[in-house]
Amino acid sequence: MDGKMKVAVMNGIGKMGFEEREIPKVKENEVLVKLDYVGICGSDLHYYETGAIGDYVVEPPFVLGHEPGGVVVEVGESVTHLKAGDRVALEPGKTCGHCEFCKTGRYNLCPDVVFFATPPVDGVFQEYVAHEADLCFKLPDNVSTLEGALIEPLAVGFHAAMQGNAHAGQTAVVMGAGCIGLVSMMALKAMGVSKVYVVDIMQKRLDKAMELGADGVINGAEKDAVEEVLRLTGNKGCDLAIETAGTQITTVQTIHMTKKGSDIVLVGYSKSGEMTLPMSLALDKELTFKTVFRYRHIYPMAIEAVASGKVNLKGIVTDIFRLEEAQKAMDYSVNNKADVVKAVIKISEEA
Image 1 (tube, rainbow, N blue to C red):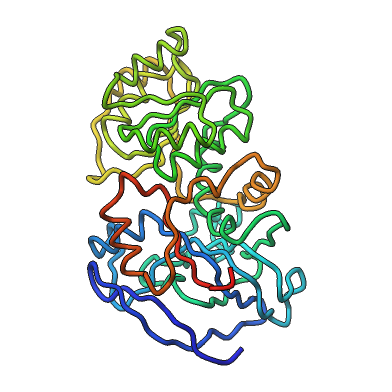
Image 2 (cartoon, rainbow, N blue to C red):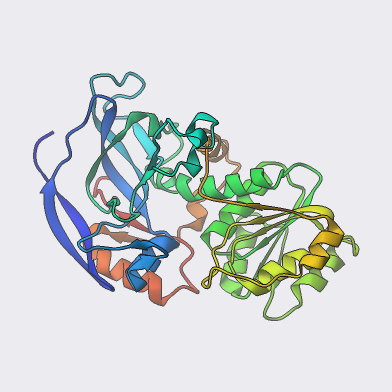
């Protein structure tokens, strides 16, 4: 397809603008996708606010966004499983396929991954993208492209649940009721976990957790989360804790609230990158710590969970902005973190 497309670009810290760029050409193993929706992730906001995450530094003009859903409009000559008109969710990371991690199926750990909106790789706050066809997953008729855009964060939640060996009969606690906390809670419920409690200090987020299926919530600003979990579990403690808030306080609480032999999954990144934890207690309890870096082999499962009604992805969306409102979308998301669970940019007027 020939022509130009509109692209929202980050021109500096706190500054969004627009460029006109050529619509990408598809390679033989790629498809061209007309994007309908792109979710705004916490990492997008962090780049927007600070210009960097660790060693990844933004060099403007830079395109944010790595949570896309859209419609295939053109296919490369070697692509057989997709056709024009197919609605798809895009997995944003292209891996090398040759390293030890790719060859053993742990491709999310590939050191040479090319991932949307991770500098220097541009993201997809734009009208079209050419992407590897094997990373574009067809959506069932009853799953919208809005939900398709949110499969990416849901995949993180499912990966966290799987890292924690989630299963029926368990009681689990999710620390943090932001987007990743909520999708983790929904993933746990979809995998059959019997009781899932959510802890946060923002009541609006806890209300959203209850709306989306949590078995109970704990406001950590009003009650001692550890005491509440012990009370709810008959003083036994929970079987699994997933930490998404990324704070030392909440991470320490997971060590205190879990029963012996339990799993703790660490998802949230701390601002300092370091924590001091009560490791003697962790050793006494023989706790297993797992961590999460993105996801692997999750998209088909996540899409099926949405299609079957086990996960209400639309329920996490609190705000939708047009592409022309990119500056407003980013500023509002930065300045209203207590109210925004998930903001999404609507790229296509037809969506």
